[in-house]
Length: 199
Image (cartoon, rainbow, N blue to C red; front, side, top):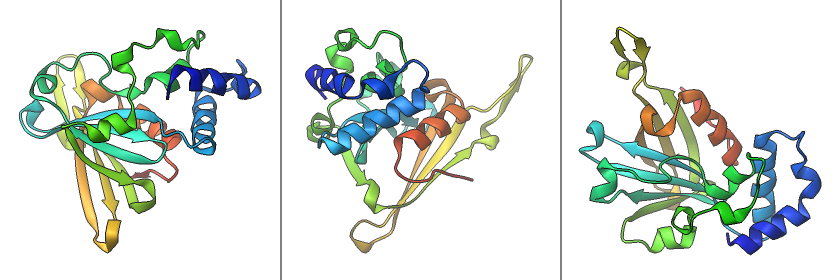
């Protein structure tokens, strides 16, 4: 999405963005507008890693049409700078009082086509090919110290039937990069056109 597209969205969706509306309703309005206007936009990014970042590391970008899975470069495995996880820049602006697109840094703006053409592109999974998307609390990753107990990671599983062959993708979502389970579940349920199953 370009700044001019976002300005057009703000003009055409004025009543739907009134201060009394919830943040999730505003983001859903953006998703609907993008689909109606043929614009694919990144809505949410999650960060996946295994073995504390020493193994497979991915960025999961949930757009209005699909999930784009990209490998993290060697540097971003250990030093994620900028936009790590959470709402993408334009959806995030809708949750703030100042919705000025000039506040978005160029490097933070994620373009789905650029993600797919990137050398780090791994795969794209269309929502229409997803049979089940489930989220599970990582009780087995709980650590305890004198401050209390905390879950370190949660787990996302996508079962897809692309081309008739069932394929399952499993991702480990570290809490320190993605936030708590409740926030992940909430924003996934807003961003996705399907039910998020809790296991």
